[in-house]
Length: 125
Image (cartoon, rainbow, N blue to C red; front, side, top):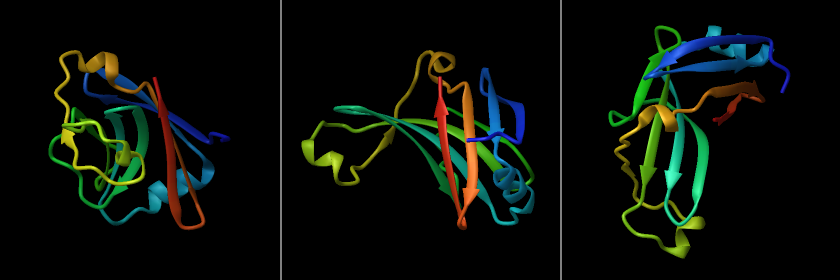
């Protein structure tokens, strides 16, 4: 991804480097509806990380920061109560995972793009 715009925001106890493509920066400026860009860290039989683009933010997040008046970024570690093989294909019920050391788990960077009418993103530590 070629980054047109890079900035830093405070997300909980850590600074998050926000990397936007030209299309992502343009779409962010044009965003009129509410949008929460959620970085989900999933603990279960396996570890998964993904970026969700939500119209309504979850209340139970580890940290949240505003990007614009109607766009926010949040970090939400989640887990399942039990480990089942069918989780890989299905959508198990999730609950927020309480973290003792939030800073160690909060992502360091988030890359966003907007192409063909859809947001995409990736984050890392």
